[in-house]
Image (cartoon, rainbow, N blue to C red; front, side, top):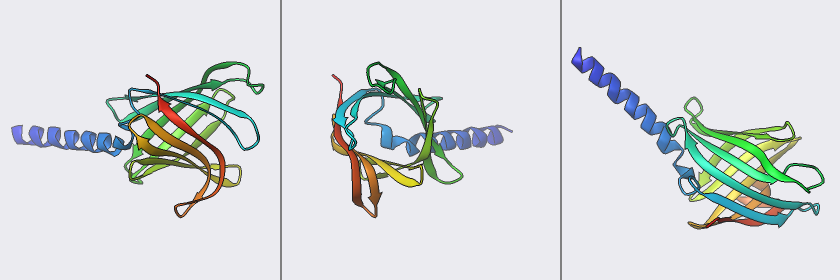
Length: 164
């Protein structure tokens, strides 16, 4: 009986550790705030601060984004609440991003080296957000059409910097 309990505890520990390590691409972002400003291709302003933290015993990453909360871009506040979770059925990381306007963006996340790449469907297009690693306190951030390792079109290009 003791052996069965020991094996059970080891299996649970292994599964939990595997989930945590599958979210390790977020380790540099977690526990910090990141801020960026820029201009979208259509001329709208982009100002955002994102705070990342682990939750549920490190099995998910929560992202809270602060930015414009009205269409006129005059009020700021909590704009998005995001969840990133490793999906063992597809062996991939999924994300859900809920916004203050009632929208939901969902897609997948993967890495290329230290770069973090989000892909999702927006209307009929596949859109990519890339956090391109520069150093531990800076990421180049791009939003656009990214295929086969190449940017076909860029809608936004700016930098996220760690808030000191």
